[in-house]
Image 1: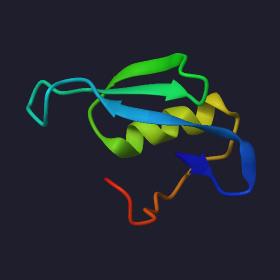
Image 2 (image 1 turned 30 degrees about the horizontal axis):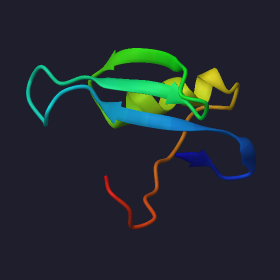
Image 3 (image 1 turned 90 degrees about the horizontal axis):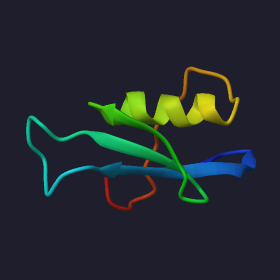
Image 4 (image 1 turned 180 degrees about the vertical axis):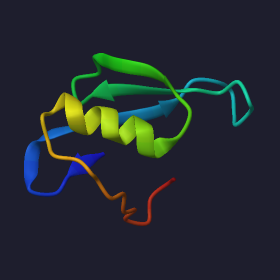
Length: 69
């Protein structure tokens, strides 16, 4: 994911399981692939963690460009 207006900020939110289930968690990594957090139960919280990691202001609004969600 990227942050509009902040080209140096970005990263990934990945599902840590073999598919959606009650025990699935999200892992957040920065653009270089370094893990910055895990255990998030929804995308909004995971994205907020990445936002704070880059020192950007909250709240953040998610928008999808037609890719996978």
